[in-house]
Image (cartoon, rainbow over the protein chains, first blue to last red):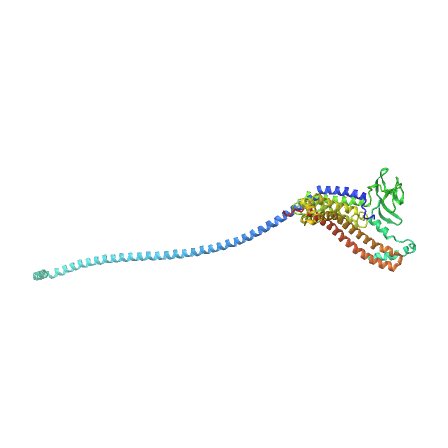
Length: 168
Length: 337
């Protein structure tokens, strides 16, 4: 029976000591520990969430990066292609222009040559005429050295002139 | 190794009690009750014929006023200042009238209570000091903080689960205190030598106070909803007069069940271990072979029971705390409306 009857003295001491220790630990013990650990847990939770968010953002950035790289590469290719096209066009243009120019110069040269030739020919013709006149003179002078010959010739000239006058 | 050593020791020692111990029988009940009960002195050990004891102070208020003296004066049934220890009850009574005075002596259990409470206080305050001195966001707990944090946080989380996010913080210190107090004293009770060895959590006065703390916490901080559930629950009209009686009885039985559960579990564990140890001494007079073999058996069972008790020590502290938190959680319930 002794065992199941609570003893007054022990009850008294238990109430006093348990109460005192509980009061002290309630004021200075447990709340400090639990608050600190809760604080740490909250921080860890937040850090984890942040990490996940950053990870997601990083994945997005990597994708973005890849996309940008791809785009840049495409752009680069386009620019290169365009540049080569421009080069070809410029070359072709230059060639065409050069050809045109050359043709023009050639044509000009040709006309000039033709003109020169014409001039030269007319000079030659003039010269030839003069030459033939002088030759004719020389011939005439030799042929008309006698009176006979002069009269004959005159007659002939008159004939010829009349003939041509009749004719005309 | 240990077993072989124990057996050989007992085999060597066996003849001597057999020679002189014919009339001297082992009183198992006395040994057990001496160990699980309370006492005015703390028997530390026996060295040959010398009993090394701690005589604890007696503080009583009898019909002749206050008396404070060492229990040395009351040893061997002697009377001192009109007081003596009643051999049947084992408590101090007045010599003349045989009545129990108001007795708040520092008994074995009280001393053990003081030491364990001081230990608990120091340990928790040191832990709290660690948290105050260190930045928890930068450092992991070390030393005593690392040891105590899981226990404290286990109870703290239990409180959150059972009481609810709204006001579990108010109750968590009490639950932590109850859990650590029971756990510490359970383990000290299993320890067979000095600082431990007192059967504190197997004493009904201790468990009663703990359970009453829970009872008052539950019923003094109960919500309107809780009291409505007790006195005016939503039941058919013919049940209305019966329900309050059942509910009040159930509320009163909760601390009783808490008291008895912890008390009986710890007491039973101590008695079982003591019985196992006593088997060795009972068998001592039946000759070497029987003693030796029974020693092996009882040592094996003793180890098993000690391990079991360590488990029970934790489980009982856990169960007490969990039930307390559930009762508080029920009393903090708010209706659906």
